Length: 109
Image 1 (cartoon, helix red, strand yellow):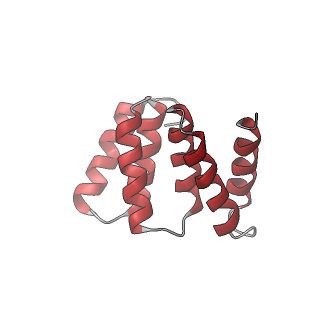
Image 2: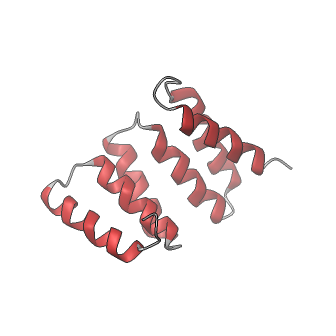
């Protein structure tokens, strides 16, 4: 995904999900690929599923907030980023916390 080969990444995550249909991180990864490819509806579906399967992983809330921001739903975006700040363990998820704070600042009027 780092080289923006989103279709290829999506196909790889599809393979993983065929074998492991309850693997939250695969939904998270595919959601990031959909987000990168600006396929927001599909990204949102995958992030919702990832959160359903693994509600304590803050990275998914960061990314879902980005989808909400892109769609103009700043209230939902802010709520997701606030969840990151509340949920994340600073020892393990400092990067996600910093990103959530930065994203919150980006939507302030």
